[in-house]
Length: 544
Ligand code: ME8
Image (cartoon, rainbow, N blue to C red):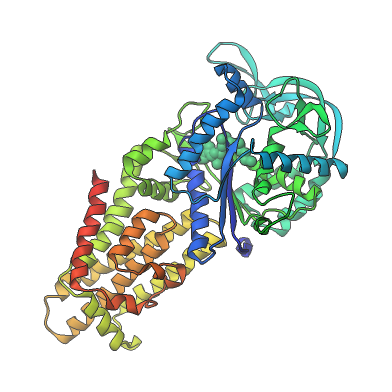
C-alpha cells in the first residue's frame, strides 16, 4: 500500500527549521542531507523547478530564555545562530531555494493571516489552561506523561516528561485554544486513505494509536507577559502565538501564502517533508489538523527519520554531545560525510555515530567499492573504446556470456529500483544501498571474469569475451556514477568527467545500459590514462 506516493511537479521538499538557541550538530546535518538528496533526485529526473526549503525557528520561550542568560536581545542571538545554520547548509552543498527565518517579514504576514482564518472559522477559543509545560520541548504534557525525578546535577526533586526527560513546570493561565479534538476522525480517515502519509510504517502505526486514544484541544498562545519573543495574537496584544503554530506555517510562507500571487503557490502541497522522529506528533497530528481547518491541501508525505546517537544516547544540544558538523566535513571531506550519513544513518532505527564508522564506510563503499571499480576498469591493459565498438557492432543477445548478461540486466534494474525506493518509498538510504550493491556486484563480476587474464589470451573466444566484460563493467560504472550524483555531487562530477560522460548526458534518462553509445566512441587509451590520474587525485585527497 505504501507504493502510492506519486510525484507532482514542481517538486517541493522541506527540512525542519532549527531552533537557534544552540549551535548546529551532526543530527541537523543529517536531516539536511536527506532533504537535499530527495530534491537533487528530482532535478536528476528533469524537474528544473524543484524547490527545497530550510531555515530557522526563532521565536518562543526557549530562545527567549537562552538570550536572557546571555544578556543579549533575542534578535541578536537569532541573527548570530541563524547564520551558522545557513553556513552549514552551504558547506553541505544543500541546494536550498530559500533559507527562511520565522522573524522574516513575510512569515509574520502569513502567520497573522492563518490565525485570523482559524479564528474566523471558529477553531480558536479562549479558556483557562493548566498543565505541565516543558520549555525545552515547547509543549504541554498530560499528567500521565509526567513523573517526579531527582535532578542528578542539583539533587533537587523536579517534575519531568517521561518521554523526553525534560523538566516541566506547572503553568496556569488564560490563553487561546485550537479545537484539535474536533479532528480525530478526519485525521484517522486521512491516515487510512494515505498509508504513505507517514514513512516509515512503524511511525504511522504509532501516530494512529496516539490519535485513536483521543486528542485534547491545544493551547496555541501564551500570555505576552511571560512570552514576549514571538508574534502577537492579531487584535489581542496580551497574547503571543505559540511557537509551534508559528513555526509550522513557515512551509506555507515559502509558497507565497496567503497572497497566491506568482508561481510559488504551485509548490503547495509539499511532496515530502523531512523531519526527525522527535517532532512527528507536531507534524503529523497538529499540522494536518491546522491545515484541514482552513481547507488547505495536506502535505503528501512525511519522511520521519531516526536519530544519531553517541554511545546510544541521542545526539542533542541539551546533552551537549553534539558532533560539530563543520569539523566532520573539514576532516573527512563533504561527500564522504554525505555518503556516510545516508548509507549508515537511520530511518527506522537509530544509528550510532563514531569516527571509526566514517572511515569504515569510506573504505568499503568508496575506496574498495567505487574507487576500486574505476581503477580496475581504467588501469587494465585494454582499450575500452575498441571493446565498445566491437560489442556494438556484433551485438547479439544470443552470444553474450552469461555473467555479462546478468550484469547488464542488473544495470537497468538498479536504475529503476533506485528510483522506486527514492520516489515511492521516500527512502534515500535504501536507494543508496541499491546503487552501492551494483558497484559491489560489478567488482565481483570482474573478479570472476578476470579480464586481466583474458587480455593475455589470443584465441577469438577470449577476445570476444574480453570486449563484453570491459564494456559491461564500464557501463555499470557509468550508470552508478550518474545515479550517485544526488548523494555525492562533487565527487561524481569528477568521476563522470573522468569517464568522459558529457554534462548533458548525466541525467536520469541516461542511466540505462547502452543509452549512450556515442559517449563510448570518445573513450581512448589517452583518456584511460588521464582517468587513472584523475581518480588517483580524488583518492589521494581522501586518504590524507
Ligand atoms: O525541533 N539525529 O528544531 P531542532 C538526527 N524548531 N536528527 C536530528 C538529531 C539527531 N540526534 N537531533 C536533531 C525543532 N535532529 C523545531 C522544528 S519545524 C516546523 C520546527 C534533526 O533545532 C531532526 O530533523 O530541535 C530533528 O527533527 C530536528 O533536527 C530538530 O531540530
